[in-house]
Length: 242
Length: 211
Image 1 (cartoon, rainbow over the protein chains, first blue to last red):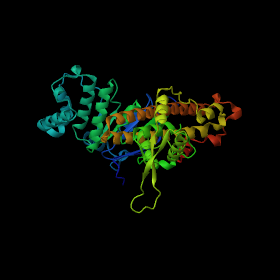
Image 2 (image 1 turned 45 degrees about the vertical axis):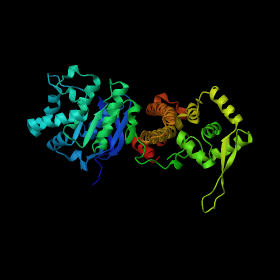
Image 3 (image 1 turned 90 degrees about the vertical axis):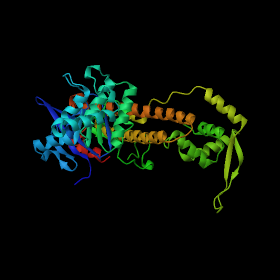
Image 4 (image 1 turned 90 degrees about the horizontal axis):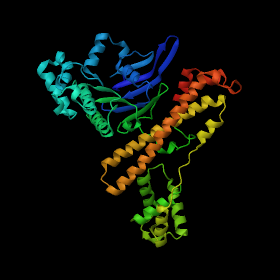
């Protein structure tokens, strides 16, 4: 059994438009450990969201295998998977509540069934404080800036203290300073032991990651996790590559 | 790019011997910028042109097994020469490289090999970006002098920007070539690759992994 937190092994995924096959992921492999911040860069339509959905088991892959802490997601029952998504894997959302919820309520809401009112609100306050927006606890979604909304999304994700945080393009609509702060926060969360898998449309946001990759044409191009010996790579030619 | 002006600039900042200068050069520009041997040939050339001169020697340690090391300092002419270079215009970087030429001249039968080559280059560029990222982390953890730290960051940012642009171009080129390969109607049949050369997607993925 692998020690990896998350392992995607030669995963392929296609969508069908009538008889036309749209290959989104092709024999993609990725491995990440607890406490590792992995950032995958890709253009619009490169398959970034599909990659995260497959990693979370929300979309089945056509071929290959996805394992979380050594357990094959395909072998899980629906209730086992629901429990996994409730307790171990968190998906950071862009959208906020439609109802008139204060942010403390919004973050605490998914925790209520498992933890009860007191503990859920305590965790929600802790999560808002962790991302540095305690002052937004009593605010409503409509009154928040884009940067604060992104942080509320992260707070909601980490409130359950998951092992893996999946973050799909969290930097959209953010200015440079807000983007940098958000990426620094995610890196700190990873340094604290959470595995963070994030997708971004800009390469700038990759620079704080432990592991980087680019997704294009269905393939993930990622350098080895350990830096290759510098004497076997020659730039910019290809003759002695790898 | 010759290491001549970089070495001259470093010697003006602070005299040093060959190995020291090579280390300082690497700290300032990264390990892939100049070959270590270039430092010694640059020093030879700068000495011949009387832009640097010997300013003494340092010993080889208590064992005295190695030859003493020559310390170099800049001459007045060297300082003037460097200032003139600093104020002069810099040529634009070369726009064309060998891969551009290969793509421009390739025949359809070459396309699968070119795609694999581009994939390899993308991987190498990503690895270089990762290396630069590690340097960035080291940099922010260090407490070096503010001026040199900022200048190093500027030079590194230039390199990062260049690798990023390269990756984007490589991706576009690869995706376009892959689409061409999947659409035989757009490929000149006289130079088209045989079915066995193209291979199935699975075979091609296997080839790519082997790179």
